[in-house]
Length: 205
Image 1 (cartoon, one colour):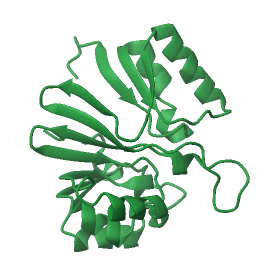
Image 2: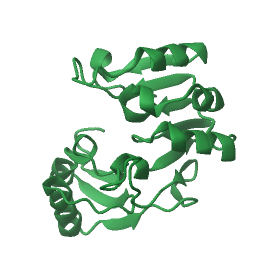
Image 3: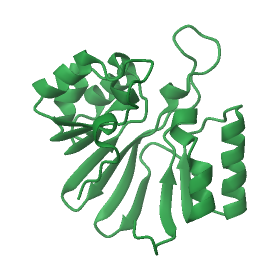
């Protein structure tokens, strides 16, 4: 964004985990945010409450993601919500797992498509691959959950068939993301993999 441009049309929070929304209050401080969209998940954390306060102060249009919603950002730029789940409990019960509620969004920019998956687990990625195979096909994939083994299947990656796969991941992270298995699967489907831990900010033009 040029330094003189102090506005953002839409901010999307895939789900309310610290590593996904922790920087957003500062974005609201520095830019005029026209719209904000998030899943139907209310988190009981300090950073989530701070973000909600910033949205209110900014008077941004506050949207709860719903499957099938299309947001037309420009005549040739369309954001479509492919999946938006309510708060769902994890496999062992207890508190709802925020990752399960990750928004899956597809951005179409003219003839180029981008697929954003948050931290969606394999189970729900495979459901999308089975139910909406044509819809999740994309040129660029933001790989789910920082390339974790639990968040990408070969079935899903074969269905998306990305030319580029972007992994947002910290250097020397304690989880050892991304998984070598995920990297091998990306190679097997012909994707060129780009990682933030190696390249820093990744810009696609």
